[in-house]
Length: 422
Image: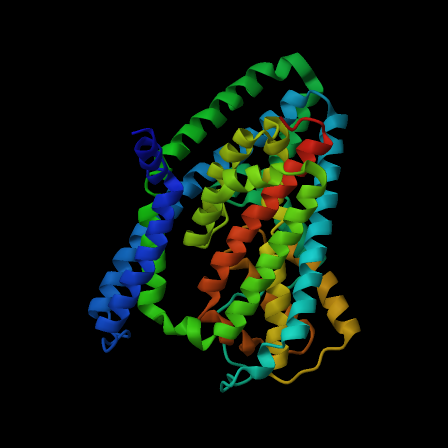
């Protein structure tokens, strides 16, 4: 009887439903693709198009609900974290530790991606007709200039930043606000307490929204497979497999770094964050996992104040999976065109990606925008980006989950370094 109760409890765990949703999404998507493969996808009256639109609507509802939570949650947790510290020096110390780790992890991600893509050379073995040079990629071009970077960091209006869900700008305003709260002490306590209450309310709202997550994940996966067919995974199998191997090696490396500092608790951390990771994987969105991730990190034992500061910063500066993807994509396209990039060019590319990627946080398809800008800087045809657009969603699933894992490790390590890991 006890065994049966435990089994029943296990089956009711949210992670179980998320896994089932992913598997069912693949199955239903492939059945739709096989059944309606002859439908005219260019016609708005196509049965498959109508079904895909329904799936897209279900996913869009979930992502909108998550985005509804993000701005107030990021703002309140960051301000409360800084306000409760009550000391500007403490805030500065934690911020510096976090940023040093972010840049170290980002640089390692880029280097690992560069090494693997040079070893595997996935582009050189892709037997496809390359798109004509000058072909429109449909991706907005953002010049990686200092003025654009600075303009994107500092908000003109916090209301505008929250309306557009620009996490980086919300973080900047919240840091100024939090520092002010920390500096004036008791006078700011009512405001900090109010925002503390708001953060707990938003986490409760999150628990309601998460009940809808399996349905949204099912719809997202089914939509991808219904449009592309599971055959897309076979056509690009080598590149997808090598990229996911790279992500696995990256996660193992970050996990090993975590093991050095927190020992076997890394296993417990992975157990706590598996649901946010699956959520990010299923929806191909790191943002969708943010509220649940914050909740799970605190349950793991990370300091609430540290998480409130490190996690929002991490979502702007520590997207390890995305960093690896950018290196993979640029060198893959160069190989596909037969362009040989020297070691010095590749190292310059790493530095360019390290800094320009921070300037487009919160922009839709930010990774593709940074890649397009980097390609033009090194005289690689931007049209090569079209080679990846068909599988970008599949790749985005892996890099989103890796981003979640990387930020979890960062939060745990900074909590440990602050001697506040419970």
